[in-house]
Image 1: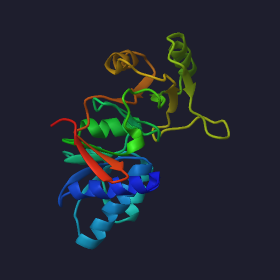
Image 2: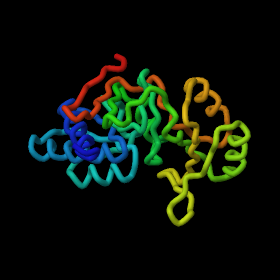
Image 3: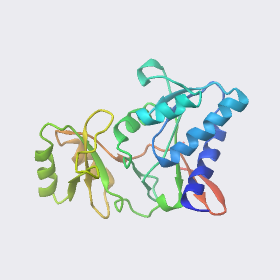
Length: 228
């Protein structure tokens, strides 16, 4: 199987965990697109009744096009489960997210969810975080000064740009700065440091959040239990 087939595999496996009547957090990214398609099939074939809370406009649009009811987070009183992807997951089930420029909304949904499930192909499982650039969502005002501060700290920052040289914008109309670190030995410490820098809205370190990880392997999906 190629990478897309592995993504489709875990997407189909994930929706087996969705039960009728759930309020479901719906993530963002290439793997989640397959999950939304599989979820739409269950809604169409089984009459599955769920309410979705999407972590991006594009996920909301895809879900609604498949007959999945979407509400805003502030319009629901709980989330039973959130299914999302991840860009890296280390051996301690800590993660980096934000490759799709949606990690602010993703983290808000995740921390308000009773359970979190990440779906990934096997290439996303790593020993140490950091090879994938760590995304930061930053306020445009003063963002160059934030970049300079991060550079002085030795964190190798770079604005994420479109192919024609414009800033990538999040759904909240903020910028993304990626930290090209190579390896993160102390993610908790780095998270605390980034939390203290004015102008950074949210970073892409998702620590002690995920409960279940479904990994796509050539011989089938593997379900890993990270924490209760």
